Length: 336
Image (tube, rainbow, N blue to C red; front, side, top):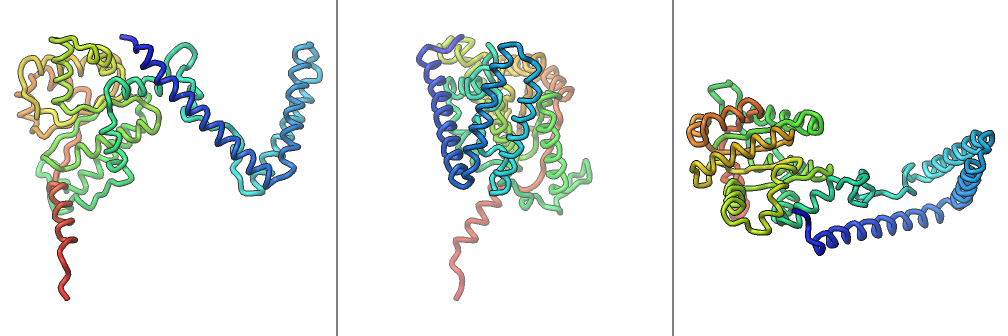
């Protein structure tokens, strides 16, 4: 369903604000550069004048003069870049920098909505502000291996918790590097508190920062939305439902904590299968052991996942408990 006029206008206002802010920043940069490099304004005026002359020659059909004008513009542009570099400014310091370079802060690429517009729709239709705040803390910058012990060993692989975590991080990096071409999927599993949700947040943060549309759901939230769509047809759910299948990345966290029944199993299969068909990436995390997972969600769900997802098992002690113990230890008064 399309956005309401008020919702569409609200999104367009964010683009207008971005355009204003970015142009204001460019004007400040130009003013600062002109003050530091007096000859720069003269170079820019010369470039502008030559560009106008080039356009006139092109319109009049005088193609013989175009190469010479083009060479003069290139020479002045090089001189401009060198002047900026000599005074410690980056080469693109005077350029207009866009919040979204792909659509140049218009929201559209041609007649199609830009990916940044789709993310704004998602944020508007289904508020993700809670996850946005979490992502400021739970991201790759704050990820640490210190909570993964080199002494805890996975008997199935012979790898320690630390080695396993490093292997999973490599898989996450591969997933991100090939995100736009491979359309991969990740399945995080392991005991409670070993970092599955944290890693999902890390990936979400990276992709949002790189202008991809991301939706995060706990399993309970996702199946609650499916139930509302199926049985009540609530307007706000009808608006949001298509984005579940169209967003660049869907994260389903803590699968197995919801009340599982045949409806949940069938909706999970539908969701997984539809996103595979559309070549859209999905991350699923669960505390369930694989044998329990298969029993809970049916063989066909299990088969779809094991055939199309990279399986990432994490092991170790509960990180939340480790952090709590650290805080408690730090709060203890020191003996004098």
